[in-house]
Image (cartoon, rainbow, N blue to C red; front, side, top):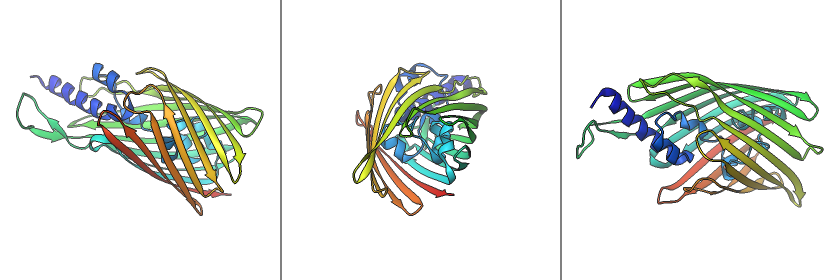
Amino acid sequence: MSYTSVLRQKVLQVILAVGIVTGTVTEASSSGDNGMLFLKMGVGARAAAMADAFTAAAQGQSACYWNPAGLVETQGRSALFMHTQWLQGIRHEYGGVAIGDGKSGLGLSFAYNTAGQLELRTRPTPRPEDTFSIHDLMVALSCARSVRDNLSLGITGKFLYEKIYIESASGLAFDLGLLYRHFSPHLNLGFSLRNIGRVSKLKEEPIKLPMVMQLGVSYQFHLAPGSVLVCFDLELPRDSGNNLHFGTEYQLCQLLSLRGGYQTGHEERNIAAGLGLRVGRWRFDYAYVPYYFDLGDTHRISAEFNQRR
């Protein structure tokens, strides 16, 4: 078996492992050129608990991922740290900071992903010859500006790096975002186009980034003694069918938040739930996303710091 064939098998194993948790298993197993799938792992346990319906509601540091235009909602400083324990030993870490004055915003993000130890075979054997892992890295810079009273634009530039066994690939990508307040400050319309760019080949294997367009609407209203946030998103990914996302959050006196969500388009998962607790300037969030077909469950924990000017 040639080295190229062996490498291709390794790439497909990794794609399947990561594809399980990003909802692209069918496409990943049939096409060897899908890569950097960790870019589809959303940011923040708050968004995960709302089934990733967050394009029009994103603000603070998490907007750097979901919709960079939402950075204009930042008034002061914001920091976000997240740990995700996925299936098959996959672990995802994220951290970032953002600053803003209500009219413009700037953010810096860092993400690291590892798929743990996978078995390596070059021929049929009862035991693996060795083990290998996958490592992904992203460093991103985001900025946003309010161009009108009710319209904001944002952009994120990203450096990407991936290493599988002894081979590596790198490249650049960017995201575009738009946020529009329609008639009322409680109703937002959002648009994001993520992962536009190109990376080098992994040995001889071409890699396509998981480009996705997302359209969203969010509405917030008062419900004593707290408030309710309702979000709808339409997701249009390049590598799979279109998906609908619905999420809601009930915030009780700005202290405790209860969240739930539902999404279509993925046979292995659809519901999500979680909660958040605010302590001073910190908010601690947890999300639970179960998977079917005996795949198991995933858990996200994030901590967000906000200091208003």
